[in-house]
Image 1: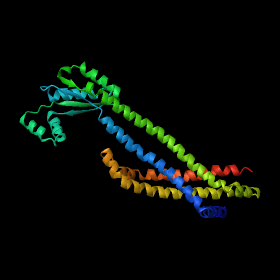
Image 2: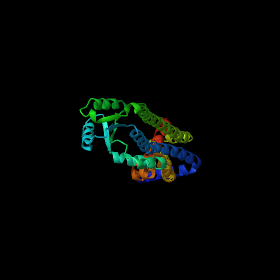
Image 3: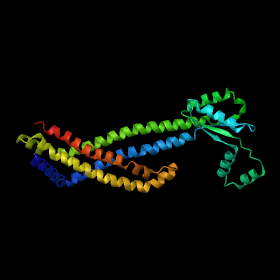
Image 4: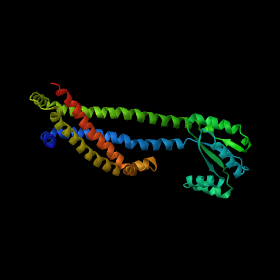
Length: 301
């Protein structure tokens, strides 16, 4: 048994080297497949990060009258948090609002100088974020009919309604497009890799049939091709891992600047074992399974 396995491995290795041009072409196609599958995993987190970042910009602000006490505003916050539609509520005091405004307008000296001449004109307010665009109306209705409505100076929902709807529409479209494109691309990549391996084995169809006719067992005939598929998948995995790490090393600063804080290289290193498993399973699994299916047709003599 051991001798038979050794012969199969040796034969598979020899066939892989003998048809080195075809083997390299197969590895190249499998590398593309592995990289595509890996990219679908790696891009999911940045897409989620982008969606969350966009949705965080979709909020409404409730401004309170000048004489409203901070403790009363915090009570309003406590009541809002209890509402199922509300995701989170942030309290911005008059002082913090002024600090944020000055920081945002620091490049305009006229505004900063004008503010220094007067008392703080900004109002304390609550920034409210809901889970979905349609839930903001329910929050506004709650505020307008609540016992503390007399404390409220203004709610900017009517001014931001169009922007909020657009943001949620864009994020929903991004999410849906990501899921559909991932499924389509993954299926196409697997089919291309499978057909490439099948064509490689097609060149040896006569040899397979002759071996079958002279009495060789299916395992003995199929074994070398499974080894070839394993080798193609393994070498494709090694190259893919090296290429992925190198590419992310150079792309990570650009992605971080674009997304405002998300480090793609750190995400890669954090999920390194998972990515190795994905690439290894894709490469070797696709190589071995495709070889098994492709040889089955020619073993039916």
